[in-house]
Amino acid sequence: MHTPLPVAIDALDLFGTAVFAMTGALRAMSKRLDLMGAIVLAVVTALGGGMMRDALIGRHPPAAFVDQSYLLIAIAVGVFTFFWGKRVREQESWLIAFDAIGLGVFTLVGAWIADEAGLAPVGILFIAMLTATGGGALRAMLVSEIPFILKKEIYASASLLGALCYLLMRYLQADASLMIWSVIIITSGMRLIAWRCNIHLPRA
Amino acid sequence: MHTPLPVAIDALDLFGTAVFAMTGALRAMSKRLDLMGAIVLAVVTALGGGMMRDALIGRHPPAAFVDQSYLLIAIAVGVFTFFWGKRVREQESWLIAFDAIGLGVFTLVGAWIADEAGLAPVGILFIAMLTATGGGALRAMLVSEIPFILKKEIYASASLLGALCYLLMRYLQADASLMIWSVIIITSGMRLIAWRCNIHLPRA
Amino acid sequence: MHTPLPVAIDALDLFGTAVFAMTGALRAMSKRLDLMGAIVLAVVTALGGGMMRDALIGRHPPAAFVDQSYLLIAIAVGVFTFFWGKRVREQESWLIAFDAIGLGVFTLVGAWIADEAGLAPVGILFIAMLTATGGGALRAMLVSEIPFILKKEIYASASLLGALCYLLMRYLQADASLMIWSVIIITSGMRLIAWRCNIHLPRA
Image (cartoon, rainbow over all chains, first blue to last red; front, side, top):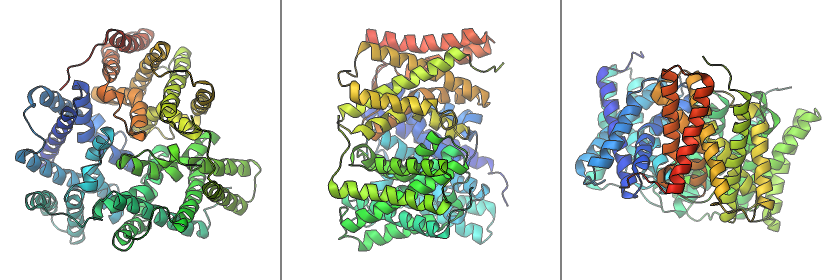
């Protein structure tokens, strides 16, 4: 069943990498860090989740060190955002929408890779969420903030829902394209709906 | 010499997982995080140390992704604590006692696995302590606190003492049961005595 | 081309480990942590970068668990600094100079190991910087500070420059000795010049 991911997903994966890198660089700028700080946070946000995934499941060396596109894109976006992105605010609607797409794609890619590695269903859920939210969590730890996944309205939850959708589709032996697109659409859609409608989980 | 750990230890390992998960969820609640935040901190606290261990020594995929019991228990305890644990305070005596047992069991399991992986003695000490205290340290980093291991009266030190006991028993070629129980009892006992008697290491 | 690193580099590597351990212990002391806190921060600062490197590229078990010298030196320096280093301030000139040497050696060792592991050029840059600055970043996350690499005048940038020098020398098929010493001298020199002359990257 595990054919390689279609080319469209590779393209979306690079797109997600670029968007996550931009959110990292913007955070560095709002913290008044220097150019290297922007590049470091861009790279950590964009690639940190995938690297933790690869270190855990034993994918050596991690994809990001073999195919250089990911690191190069993250670095380039970090530099570009630092010099030309001063007017972009972290709350722009288009940025949140793009970020939601990145969340969906990374959830799918994480679930797919975890599945290929032969993990049990709960392991697939964990790795999918780690891939999608781990980079942002690392970024937050580096700048001493509490990460989104712990406090933001429906962020990790959207990724979890997407990963559950993956497991369901897999159980139903759905067609690969259907599986792929529904995971992305459900994750991204859930994130956007929660953001627009300001939906929260119950709070302690 | 390395027979599998006895079933009683597997049961205690699950017990330690549940207790650590509860401390994670309680911390989330005292920080006013939402349900997903409680689940994330429960999982990170309970499984973070073991996952870092497995990534370092190359146990792929980590046990937690193959045997689903650990992740499922951590998630269940996170949810349960969030909804029904509102009156449990993080300083309850029974919780500290249970946590001390978890510290002891995780120290033993970490030392055992590091030994099986063929590490040198100092590596065994390191991995035993990482297994027992790494999850709590990750939790603290996620909520921007300084971890227990850095400031609490005898916590990492109790784990170190237990791991030293492991090395001693191994050197003396002690019986496996004797080794197992003495590591757990020394670690947990030291932690509890230090807590009751308010014993500290010298401070800078 | 990959002959083992010369013995002089092994000695410098141990020297760098000791210096990084001292900076970790001093940070613990300025935070008023106890003896175990000083040891933990000494070990994390000295070995954290190399351990993250080994977990990512799949060097199992990490060198630090096989050759015990590194862990033992870091622990010994932590204890020694805690008891006899009370008058050493973190800003002493000699400490910053020694730290710059450690930064250079760790950058070289990281690049060398990444190269041996067959990583692509951008992966070599990443791993060299992670080896040199990852321990300090972990230390900062543990004590809830923003790491040097994100805010200090030319720190990660010096490591990046050294790693770029490595790639250039490699491309030119330079002699191994020339490559080794120029990476160390350029990294350490850049760090020291930036410190003395107070050179910064542009800030957001």
